[in-house]
Length: 296
Image: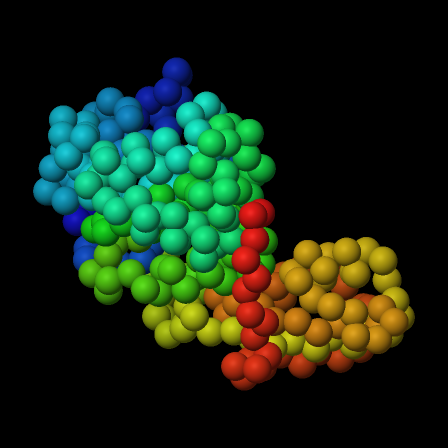
């Protein structure tokens, strides 16, 4: 569904992409990783038809530069940086729905599941939303309609832990044939979401590998952390994950989304000398908190 041959792109004096040959088929969920400047965002812009380039690109059998409007109807895209759109939220949803022949009500519903009340903010300019609100609306615009390809550039960067869990659930609901290209500069951020990893470095593919496809995107993990002593820095970090103090700053309990396991353990690794005991297991239904309706 995505095919490139001898793809080159030069920006200024620098060859950002250097002869890329890629084949990404149905049902593949690909992590596109690499350091800043590796060429990830440039590749995405070429795939979306934003850039001229040398070489061949086929997306759904079409050249995205020549048939951009038609191709984009079948792509859900979440950019790394939200565009500075001044149009109100309601108008933006109607525009996306009309452009892609989609149901605007479904986009509103997906936004609600992510914790963003689009109806409440329908007259609010998009540019004045918070970073998290913008990200939730952009994700809803991409996942709230039927698409054959999802292109996600650091999609969960501004999401709170609960919204990240819902985001993973929404990905799990996609048809198995959907192609997903998920860009990140860190593999641990996306490892649980994908079944293939492509790494770029200086515009070239330096790694292309299949990975085990066994993670349940809807799973939740229950966690209990016991500390040697209270620590304000740890408290701030763990409360950002939605954990609650169950014992004077020494005992913390909460749940995390299964695909967030590596990212969560990465947070804990900074406090390893402080942790006396860690219990991480599959959460029972009663352990998972119900989502509250929110305008955030």
